[in-house]
Length: 228
Image 1 (cartoon, rainbow, N blue to C red):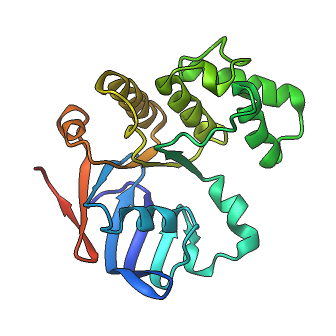
Image 2 (image 1 turned 180 degrees about the horizontal axis):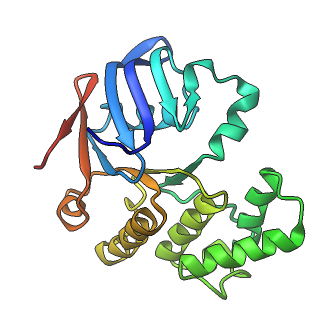
């Protein structure tokens, strides 16, 4: 029996899209410091589960508690505060293309109520150093590589020191060498900061190179696998 803090507690969760059931009666426990993979075919419900964790899809019924927040009782006005507990990384980066690297990060800090310009500047410098992008502050997204763009996306997700990082195919657009760089970064975040990480992926090569807990989504449900 683990003594670790439970970051995600799922009991009898049902997820719908436009009144159509996608996942039913899910049971899942993920703990502080876990490094997890979410596997499943296209359309299996992986993205729906991640979007529910991010409060983009509502809890239809059942229990979903993320870092102490009961999402079934989450009011729309509380969603911004809840999302500060999370970091979300997407396959397509989702950077603001007309903003420099610095402004992409500063935009998030301003939106999450960092009032002091001096403190924002200090935090951005710390995070860019951590993701190995010092000196890139003034670059525009189109002026940096795909791997660097994803590092900026990771930096953005870390600004508010989240307890949980969710990656929806975060290396799907990257070549194998760059994928490994990003995965080493996420692994370092997990091991050094104790951040819980959940990654949806189709890249089975990662499972051996960067071991973790494995969950498979299929037939409207989810099961944990010990290995492949």
